[in-house]
Image 1: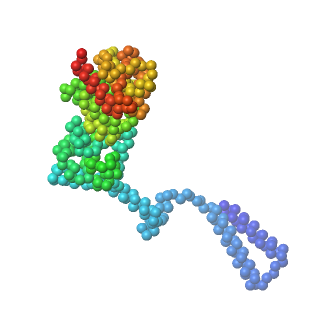
Image 2: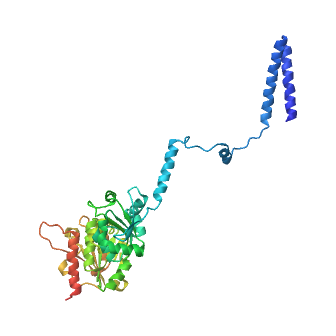
Image 3: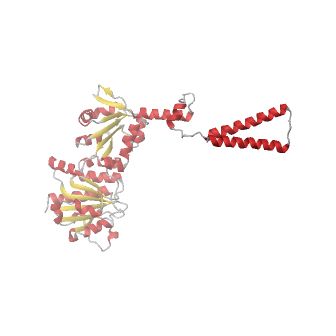
Length: 400
């Protein structure tokens, strides 16, 4: 590189001399000194260019840049950066557990929550989503009466939200025991915040999250209580109104029947309105929900499968025509060792899948109806089911 630099310098000198001779430039001593300075400047520039060409440039690493530059002070921070840091600090503080408050009067410990608290959103969003609720097998219960029913049936409580201490006085002993044995969490929430999450027009100020009872566990509970259920399975078809479904379950628990099957397409039997309509019936009766018609036969007890009768409650006789023979509900004939009663919603009625299932048992399937006065099309589905169920119980308990 040095040899190359010397050669280029000589060429540069020869070029300058050649230009000077060709133009016959004769200057004074002052002018000659100026030309010499220009030549010297040009040579310095050329030398700097060649010197810089020998320098090897390395990529700048991140830690080298951080080492060279001083950290940004608070005065130099941008407003957007400051707001982001503040938001992260707020979220971190919100994730911290709220301090527990010891109430000596109730002998309970609880924490305070607000609507902006992530804990409240986590608790209630999980329960409001049916998909998440089914995955975690949880239900939400509102009101003192229904919560007491859940405690009486042995359900495990995960969390309790209340707005005033007076709401806890009636359930003080049950809540204390649940907190001691199952580590249940208790939270105090302002009334206006709790109202935001309630499904009722007038919130009772008390909301609890319980573990959903299993159908197998309820079957064992019925056997332990000594109240042998009737050999009847009620199948709900096209029931779209939660209050009606709750009333159906309440009636079935009053007999009681062996189980209730809620087919795919019906409303959720574990939502708040259905639970209130059931008045605790869901906690005392085996319920299998979201069952497909091709899976219905699997719910029949194996020992009773050979003598299983299927009965459809149908009041729309014009729908049947001459395809099916329809019997008065008071004269439905011989019953089997196990009986399946299918009832449909008032708007949609019984589906074609139900009739296919009935026809699969041959002569052991039949349709029944309730005679009504002229001008009355139908009864409420829960009222119609009540009449037919108690008639079935009369025939099974006191057979002729």
